Image (tube, rainbow, N blue to C red; front, side, top):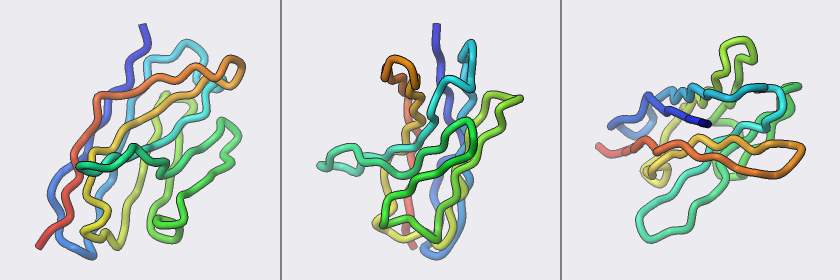
Length: 117
């Protein structure tokens, strides 16, 4: 059974930083494109960043230059370093695993990030 477990959310002031982590119980981690998505109240879930097993990354325009996604293929983990946080970054952040061969997606339970003074 696939499990994605996020950690690292919380409350931070504008301009602050947080680091999210996701531990994945995937049989062959390298077969998955890993990513982070977020959903604010009343909004649709949106892409934040993705990373392939080879390290190729993709970011939403709204987070480019502020967020960095990384993965450790030996530990089956993916992280999201978030700097210069803004109130509009407030959302529930979800870890996502997409199997490259089939397109099947798996989701974590989500972790709340709140940016407020």
